[in-house]
Length: 214
Image (tube, rainbow, N blue to C red; front, side, top):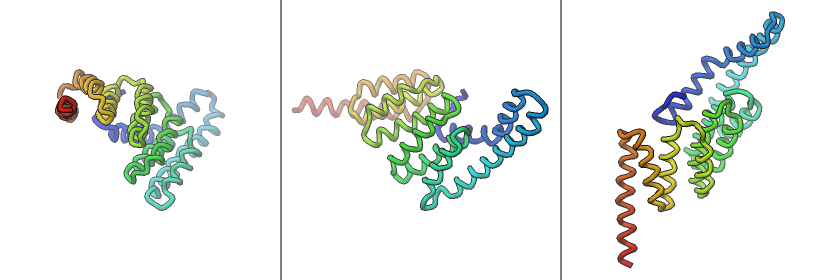
């Protein structure tokens, strides 16, 4: 899977993929079934269903900021769990919930995104976001376990960075340093992680100094 700088770029890539290829994927399934008769009947149905899902998806997103917007997105995701639109809706709803600091709601949407993901790579993207939310809710061990379940090699750097952030919050500086070092071994020009590592070293020194004074 192609590497992206941010998770937002990854979500946008998934969104564009389904926008450009959703109907084509359905058509390919029909062609795989074989038979002109199947194409004439089922093919038209697939296209119509994809178009209907696309329209419903757009309408759901337009209402996401309304009073019951997040509930509408959750309902859409459940009703369309067999489509890529379900995952996109869940990811975007989770992002809105996080912005509103409604982390419990974000956890619900991200858990749904993991369950409905059309591929392991998409599920892993949702897992990384879920881990951040679990940590925000105070369940750091669950967050680390979620990160350990991410299998896509293309996300390994991001997984290590998130682990590093969690370990820093836990004041587990040794594991935090190991995580950040793992990122820099693959991305030596990652200035953000370099800064995190520098801050980590300073924090570790301060804690060690405070301990020795006692």
